[in-house]
Amino acid sequence: MFDETLKLILSLQGRKPAPTLPRRLDALFERLARVANAVEASQVEDAIWEAWMSHPDPRVEERLEIASRAIGTDDHVQAEPLLDALVTAYPDYAEAWNKRATLYFRMGRDAQSVRDIHRTLELEPRHFGAVCGFGRSACGKATGPARCSRSTRRCGSTPISAPSGRLARNLPQNRTGRPIDPGGGRLHYLSMYAETLKLIVRAPRRRPSHRLHRRLDALLRRLADVGSAASAETTQDEIWALWMTYPDRRAESELERATRAIVAEDFGTAERILHRLVALHPGFAEAWHKRGTLYYMQSRDEESVRDFHHALALEPRHFGAMLAFAELCIAAGHGDDALFALDVALKLNPHLAASRERYEALLAYRPISGH
Image 1 (tube, rainbow, N blue to C red):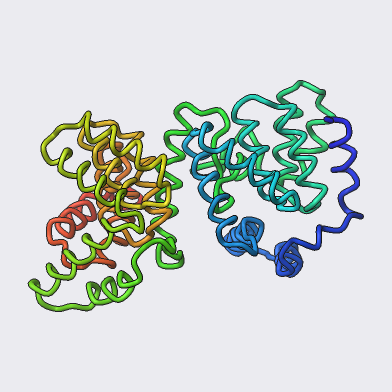
Image 2: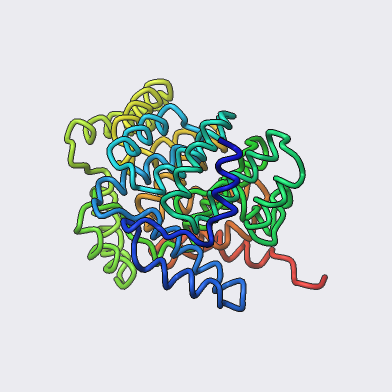
């Protein structure tokens, strides 16, 4: 399969994408070939990844999003059956194949990863992420420098082994086409901070999960504009109450039980309830936030960041998750990241006096450039 996939990569230029792919991809690839600066290129890449992730059935797209988040947190047990079901039911969904290839790569199952990369490229010959994935698998199998260079040079100018900026562009991709460290360890830990910060920075442009209550839109607009402290407090209470709601009433009741257990510092009970909740209802943003809070209280920072990431992926306006993430950044020595998170949270909710003081103190402490 390695040889067949390499031949496929070398013949990609003359092949046509599957008709099931979004038509807007043609224009996006033309634009990507013409852009002159890195910022615009990054924006176009994001749009391409969004198009690849899209599907005519929103429920199918949501299942792929859940699988992608599971891959990002190394929850292989959740991701694999979701992706197996997707590629079986929707064999022309190129990105489902690519995501399963990424999963197999992270699990060290290279032969299966290459097989799924091959299928991805049959459907979408322009899939630079799949080409990069094949390059990593080929190098990992020690199939020779010529084979490695042929495939990896198509990934762009950034070497796979040398992260550019916070993270290497060419590592396996998450929901927005951004990197996930295939090696795990410390880089994966740091990458979760970076990925969560990106979610926060892009919060104004991102859409909340359809499972969230529609009244939240009006309440969050009111919270940003309201003048009196009393009205702000009432609005905040309404927002928190709606975040706690969920279409499944039993899940909602379980979250209330877990919250009471956290307040009572019965962490064992809270963790058991929240584990069950996020497994059964991965679209319940507040369940992820509450488990992130539990881990925060237990000083389990890596797990806490991971769960705040899930919460913000579903509810990009969750100022509570942003504030907790900012504290984790401060504890990790990432003062600038904390400033970004606090800034976005305070734009959503300008009535957080203690957080504003925290923001101003960090700003005052920040070293002046050049000294």
